[in-house]
Amino acid sequence: MNRYAAMGAVAAGALALALSSVPGQSQTAVPDFSGYWQRGGALPSTFENPTNGIAGPVVDPQPRDGDGIPWIGDFTNPILKAHAADVVKKRGDFIKAGGEDLPAHSLCWPSGVPQVLNLREPVQFLQEPHLVTMLYQRDHQVRRIVLNGEHSKAPKPSWYGESVGHYEGGNTLVIDTIGQNNKTDVDKFGTPHSDKIHVVERYTLSDDKRTLTVEFQVSDPETFTTTWGAKATYRRVAGPVEEVVCAENNKNASTGLDYPIPVSAKADF
Image 1 (cartoon, helix red, strand yellow):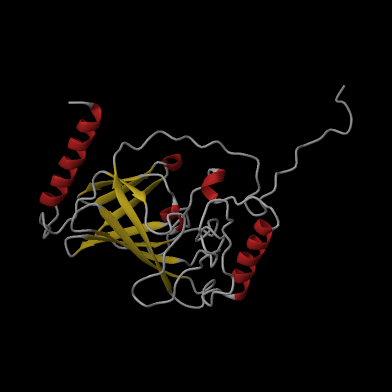
Image 2 (image 1 turned 120 degrees about the vertical axis):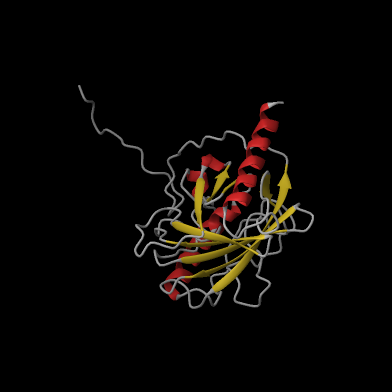
């Protein structure tokens, strides 16, 4: 048995343990997310509109008929409060003027939720009886979701916050996340959020086990005028997740400009 087959056997064993160890859970109640998943769908770099009729995300209204078209967010989206709309507008103006588009992952920063759904490299799910671990190829970023637990009363803000989850309907994993800091963007367009952001994701496995659809809702009373939702689609792909080590560069994420290089006005000797 090669090492990748062995890894698959270990994952299958962990899932079997999960199925047999969680009271009230059966093999039909826990979807098998083992393997590797990669963003696909109509817009693999950003979110699609939700299917449940609620307000949708900030999108790029430009027709995407080829590469090389800069991604510019629609700052007039009514979900945005005035200060958030101003941030999206300034980022768009900067890019239209020739500035470089620098999402957090290009600077080796954690992406946060839900922007992590826009990472185009594969992700792997490790399912245990009381924990789901999500391993992203991009810079080895990791999320941990405690199953059937409750949120802390006041979790200390962090890049990925505090996530609790549960299975529903035999094909869905629901993840509820609070406690994120305000250092990440919500999407590719620089849409900000506060540390009051609350995200609920629903990962649903298709009947043929080849597609994973994520529908999510976001609320943040300090940034958005209403709760809004969006969708992302993953396709099952061959593994494994590769080793990708990010190297920080000298760009300022908020402006896209280089940090100034120190210059000595006179010799040190």
